[in-house]
Amino acid sequence: MIKILLVEDQADLREIVRMQLEIQEFLVDEAVNLTEAALKLERGAYDVVILDLKLPDGTSISLFDKFPQKLASKSIIMTANATVPSVVEAIKKGAFNYLEKPVEEELLIAQVKKIVQLNHREDRYRSMESEMGSDYRFEDIIYESKQMAEIIDRAKILAKTNNTVLIQGETGVGKEVISRSIHNFSLRKEEIFLPVNCASIPSELFESELFGFEKGAFTGAVSSYSGRFIQADKGTLFLDEIGELPLPIQAKLLRILDENVIYQLKSKKATKVDIRLIAATNKDLNDEVNLKQFRGDLYYRLKESSLLIPPLRERVEDILVLVFHFIKIYNHIYNRAVTRISKEAESYLLNYSWRGNVRELKNTVKSIIPFKKNNTIDLDDLSYSIIEGKEAGKKQLPTLDEHEKKYVIKVLKATSFNITRAAEVLGINRPRLYRKIKQFQLEDTVQGTDTQPA
Image 1: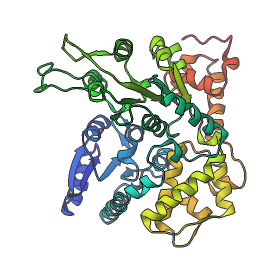
Image 2 (image 1 turned 90 degrees about the vertical axis):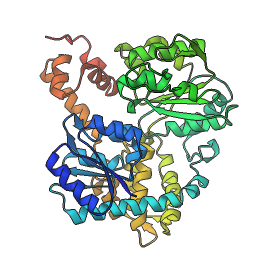
Image 3 (image 1 turned 135 degrees about the vertical axis):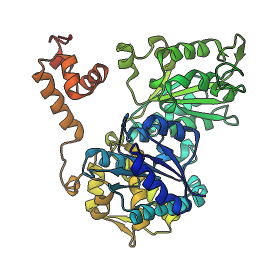
């Protein structure tokens, strides 16, 4: 039976959509906010996820960063305003489509069935995709750039050690691909590789999820749970988005790395573990340390061996080889025969900013191939999947970063460089504004000004 997660805070609309889906004999699970949706996505798998864009505790866009595999190509966004930038961002992050409220029943059911059909077909051919370069081996990683060649060479050397490895880079650059390749090239390759996305774990569950607990440790603990560290014993534990770890958990992680023992929740007995830790983050942990959001001692322990993967826009040589790689994969999956890219489309691809990096590029190709009836990807194909205007391939347009930088400067000047006031105007917190100042190289601009709260 097809299982669907419906995330909508308006009870009347949620009831209507649920009834429409159940008439089609779909099994519907419901959530009313981001917190509830995250818990359900963490615990279960769904064939389709229908997300209201705006929820009481935030926008559903944040779920795409926490659950990219569970939402990419399986999610439908419901919104009252299809022109808002958030809709564009959701599509870039992998949403299959969006529907405007009030949602038409026939269109909704058609979209759900299309998602099920396409993903069922992809599941049938997943082994074929694995054979063609997604098997997480160094020799299967696709690149042409010198930067990636140097990273792969360094990663191969690190793989043969037992060092803790820290992989840094923007979302979608391939941090998990590199981490799995390190594991598969290491002496632990016959043991388990256990990935954990720290961003998807509710803050109150970190300790029990990572370190485990004994029966009766808390209300509802009717049996013991080993925890991720014990589950990964003898193998590799991959902590993705490690920058999301709460400070108390960071202290315990440092102790584990130093002593190779863990203490389960409410247990006085030490359990010895033998793991190889690989951590990844899209944050600048050095900045987080300066802002007291991340422990300095843990950061220096993690970075004993580090890799920094540059964003796709900084290694343009890799773009077209990746495009043709994904074309080959999805030609097989969707039984198509695309072999060419028009000059206009090629120029567009090379000039596009790829803020979602390799993941966005892959989703772009995936969204095009099923609908191709000829052998060439042209500019019109891209206009449906990349919403930045057709002129991007003809001339270099100002990037979103450039627009954002100008706006940050404008707000800083308008608030007389008062960081607290500027952060309030921008709708972000002080640590994030400090990161923006460093990202846009504005340190000299604010140096010597009064940045203390008024």
